[in-house]
Image (cartoon, rainbow, N blue to C red; front, side, top):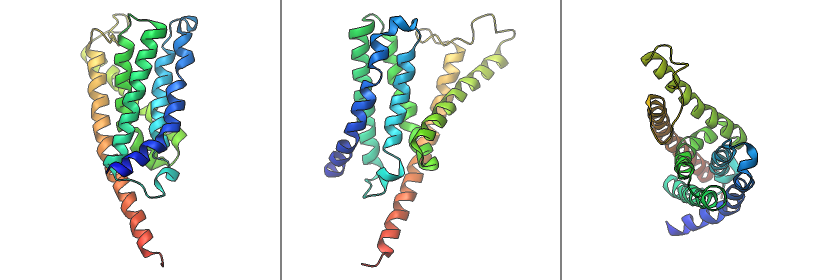
Length: 209
């Protein structure tokens, strides 16, 4: 297991370096961006791009590792990227803001669970990132529907806000919906990857020696 894992980590390293450094300008100049969470969205997009790059057709066409090895390498890359992003934010942006590191850790969950399956289906990393982000956004819409069904005349009461430090119904519903989607797509991604891996091995065995 160690040899395929080392090979996968070496293969992911260049993309990891790029995706880890891309949010740096948004971190440094966050005050000039009006306080908008540009760095947060940039980090999420980079995480999704990092995962999508490892499930593009070219990355799994030549001696692909088993599912658990590939996901272990992807998970290690995401966690380390989140740690570096958090340290950069605390060191260069706001040393008192511990909400942003918390959000960064949450961002790696949909990237880890949703993106592999979508990339395997679309076979296009860029399209997979956009579609994965859209699906995650739809979970916020689902949360909004739950809030609308529970409350009446809620548009002026702040019930559609996402207070990360004080979870309300909107945030709780979003977490539940995103978790269900992530778990479902994680299992679908595993099945899809193993099916493609088995098909590739069968095709290789039928080639004349």
